[in-house]
Length: 586
Image (cartoon, rainbow, N blue to C red; front, side):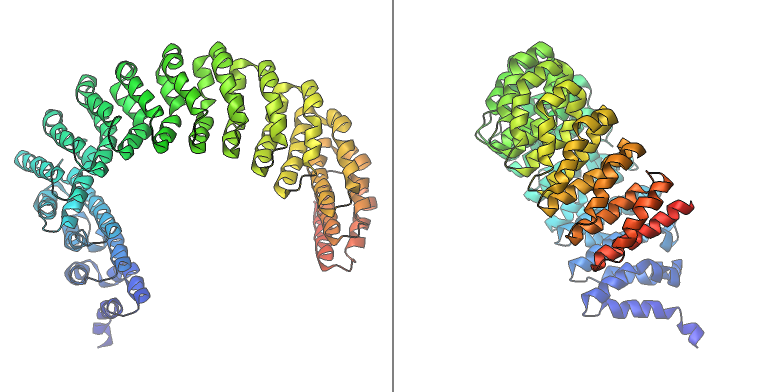
C-alpha cells in the first residue's frame, strides 16, 4: 500500500504547503516545483500539477512572482517542446494580475516558452492566447499582450498576421495610457519581425499615433522607438519619417520627453545618418544644450563629445563650442559636472589649435570650480588633453591648478590627484617632477585622512618604479625614513607600510642597508599597533633579503616580538615566524 501511495505524497505535501498560512512555506514549495515535477513524472505533471497551479490563485505577489519564474523553465518537466502548450494557461492567468513585476515575469516566461514552441503549436495555442489577452476586459491583460506579439507574429499565416497588426494598432490607441505605454515600449521588438512593406505603412502609422499622444509618458517611450525603428528603415525613409519626429520631440512641451531625446540623441543620429545630423539635428541639439530645464542640460552635456565626433571640427567649433562655454558656468553644479566628465574627449576632435584657444580656458575654469565632483572629473581625464596639446603647454596652464587641488579640503579630490601623479610624472619627466611635485608627495604621507596616506604610500612605490631605484634612493627614501620618528603613531604606521611597498622595488642591498634597520628599530616602539605592523613588514621582507640576513636580523627580532605582552603582537610575530620557516624550507 505504501508503494502505491508514495507518488501521491509530493503533490499532497505541495497542496498542503501551498494552502499554508505561512508565506515562507508557500514560497518554498513553489521554488521546489521542479523537484516535485520530477517526482511526479511528466504525465502527472501535465495532468495534475499544472491544472492545480492554474486554479491556485494565491493572493501573495511574492508567491505568484516565484511561480511565473519557475514555469518559464518548465518545458523539460512536462515532456518537452511538444507538450509546452500546457504551461500557457497558468501563465495567462498571471498576465492579468495587478502587480506589475508578476505580469512582467509571466510575459518573460511566455516569451521564453513561445521561442521554443513548434510552429503549429504557436498557431494553435500561443496566438489565440495573445488575442485573448489583447481583448481582455482589464487593462492588465492588454498591457501584457503587447510584449508577446514579436513571438507570435513570425509563425502566423498571412491572414493572422494582418489581424495581429490590426490588434496592435488598436492597442496603440487604447483608452488606458498604461496600455499605450506598453505598446510604445514593445513597438521596436514587434517592428523587427514585420515585413518591410507593412513596416512602412502599418508600423509607421502606429508610431505616428504614439508620437502625438497627449500623455508625455507615452511620447517619451516613443523616443526610444525612434532609434529602434531608424535601424529597421531605409536611410531615405528614416529621414522622411523619423527625423521630423525627433526635431519635434526636441521642442516638446514636456521636459521629460526632451530629456529622453537628449539621452538618446547619439543613437538617433546613428539612425538618420551623418548628413541629416549636420543639417537638422545640430540645431535641435543646440536647443537642448540651452534648455531651461537642468535635467535636460545634464543629459545633453553628457553627450557633447559623442555628438562632436559625428560632426566635422568646423561645425563643432561654430555651433557646439559656444554652448559648451555657457554650460561651463551653468548655475547647476550637476550640469557642470556632466560637462566636466566628457569635455576632455573634445580635445582630439577639435585638434590642437582649437583646444589651446577655446578649450583650455574652459578646463581651467572647471578645475577651479567650487564643486569637488566637477574638479574630479577634469583631473581624471587630463591625459586625453595631453595627447593633443603636449606636456609643456599643459604643465604651464594646468599645473598651478593641480598644486592647488593637491591641498583641496575635500579628501576625494586630493585622492584623485594622488592617483594621477604617477601618470603625470611619466609625462612631465623627472626634472620637472622634482621641482614642482616632489614635496607634495611627501606632504600626503602626513595627511589627516587614512585613504590619502595609504594612496600616498602606493604613490611613492609607483614613482620609484617609474624613475628607478637610484632616483628613489636620492629623492624619496631619505625623506620617507625621516618620518619614522613622527610623534603620532598613525604616521609611523604609514611609513612602515611605505617601506614594505618600496622594498621589492629597491632590491635586496638597499633594503638591507637602509630600510631594514629602520623596521628593526621600530620593533622597540611603545605602541603595540606599530609592533605588530613591524611583524607584518618583516614577514614581507623575508623573500627579498638573503637567507643570512633573515637568520641574523629578522628572526631574532620576530622571536622577541613573539614574547611580547600584547596578544596581537604575539599573534602576528608567530605568524611571521611560521611564514619565514616555510620560505626557508622552500
